[in-house]
Image (cartoon, rainbow, N blue to C red):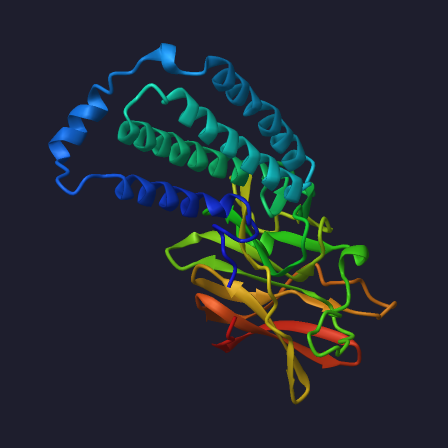
Length: 346
């Protein structure tokens, strides 16, 4: 299963362990007759003497915090995540050292405790900043407003990290009481439709690696969705598709807002499997959905478009939370994606 918190942050993930080390160092230096009231008074009035602090060293390490920090932001914006990790780690290290020097005028216990607090808080802030500037998957644009019949928006889903991701799912919501997914055409370009080639056992499937469902969310029949799956995205790879408002339903409502979010992904794949005449492709679902139709794609068939623009509607079926199988039903080099009951083991 994809880890949305420490998925490939080897450097920054060390912060809690470093804090634990500092905490045990504090406990190790406490006397056996330690009193919490005494420590509270010491923390509130640490008897700091600034003249005992090596101010040159403090200003040096404090200034060193910003160069790798700005570099980390730059690396993250341009998709170089591994250098960004090391730069954020360097900024956190310099912050911790600057705190230890700056609090050297305090008593031993107060110095370690306040330095640990600064180290922990700065580590959390750097970690949050890392997630902001270094997202693994992105959707652009993230939202759109349809206001005229025939209007088309092209969306790009991209893996911005330095490693491959699997079982990638992207969901687009249509919030309207007047229109549903039936009023839109979904166009996946031929260049974005690639073979389902990646397999742990070396088997090469001549099938598309993309699938899609449409439907509505259980808690609101007015919120419809288009759920796109891409089994594998290589590092820095992107795919494109378009949504066109065809306005099949007659209504006085003149606009439809579309929002999107990355539903899920994984660093490690669940292998595609085959049973009978069907190939089973795993996908990660993080919220229950009511599926009403599936988008059919055609692979290596030059007489047809890559995918139908309108999904095939087969009634309502529930898509549960977890790792589920999508079936690619193979017949004459055509593929119809459908949700199946049962769960896979990520």
